[in-house]
Image (tube, rainbow, N blue to C red):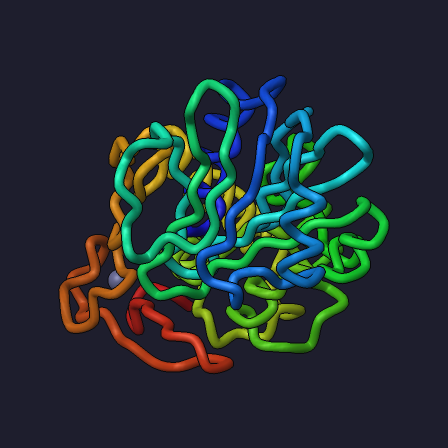
Length: 270
Ligand SMILES: [Zn+2]
């Protein structure tokens, strides 16, 4: 599942191997994968540009290009980006191909077809994708307990939903949110604003740990070069309903919160 550790792994790979290279041309195989602008404008914008950097904001891969153009890629649930030789046969689930110099392609691949790409000037793209309303990054060095406390204090919603709201905190997907709340022993059904100082400290430490471990193991998906990450998708409780909680042995419970699958221990998460 493409959450922040998976996206961050790809961004680091991209920074290492494609920055400074030329995007020769773009081929769109699935028009629905282009979120903005039109497919023709998209391919025209993304011809003969130099890749200047690779960045991440929430779950977006952001690739600034020469000529003040930004390419944004969102992997949705299971998308990925692969760097492969141009002559390599295309998988059926390939959505977009960016042909680079040196006979290599960057390919946006998604078996579910939900991944999306967009291009434009940084200002236009920020507006279209609402990038400026994203909250602080959980992976940022400045993310501390005070930041978490401030972001949660203003919210009346249920903790799980608030943690998934990227305007509150950018960086937690469904899996990492559930695992973080389990690690902090906090019930996902709590009100976000109800956490005590001690609980905020626990939750902050848990979020940092879950993300850092995911990144250290290079996520759960394939990296830019097709190598499988070593992080475990179902780590302690995620997608393990009915199995014993690793901490107390109680059966892991399942429920839906805000339309999202949620897994938690009904005994040791309070
Ligand atoms: Zn438990």
